[in-house]
Length: 375
Image (cartoon, rainbow, N blue to C red):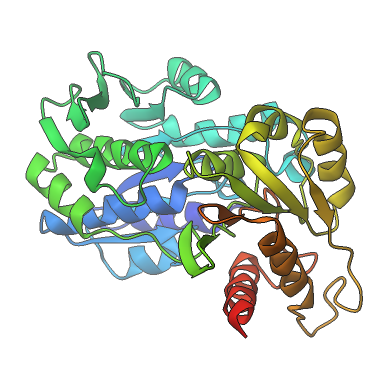
């Protein structure tokens, strides 16, 4: 009996309709949801009957059965693994870093699943990421397009003098980088990737610009949840792997960061993250089941950074009732480390299910704890 995923089933249903919907697909270790939302906003700005679906939360089968013309499809590595037939009109790999190795077994198997999105007519990848660039170079797609934060070459989209520029599809200037939300290098890369997919589908530069202007990221993706005593508190609970946490830390420069980290690492290492970004850290508060790995990495690579470990008490692994006590204690420890002008950043580099229902529950607990600082 064949075993298929829900996007594969959606593909079968779509191919049996006339005309079939156009798939513009996005994958990557980080940035998928933001890029998918940006792409859907660009398509709608152009007047297309488009919807964001897939791993973003709306099943692809439902989107296909609703008859939408164009699908902005977020696909996880798990979904791609079980999607043997899917061939999007244009597909993008944003980046590839160690994640979900507990499921895929090896980094190569994880990357191979991501590469399935590049089997259509146009392949797009973030070429500033070496692993994604390698997948693009090996892709069988007739057209291969790179996105970069540097000045773009032919068949690339990039940034020139603070402006997003399309040199692959002849679109010229697209939008000011300063107008992109979320701000910072990861947000700009996501915007370039979404623009590349939109332009591959023939969306005009003006619609790309208007779509970016209209888009705002969802919750738990780096938004500010409070400011107390001159310290800003940011919720990036969606940073569920080291690659995402690193991007979140970089985005806070030049403000020193008090980092709240920890949870389930899913087989990933945090050594490189800590070694690269230790100078940005004021202090670290560590929570979650895989605390030992994070504390060990800090001891090896950032011995001068103060560390507080919040050990579970009655609020340990989930037993049917969520407790915010661990986050309350973590936030109070972080507040004690922070100085005016600092950022307390929840960017855990790990999954949440050891102590919370999901990343959103963890983010809500963080916001509640920050609200309690004034109490």
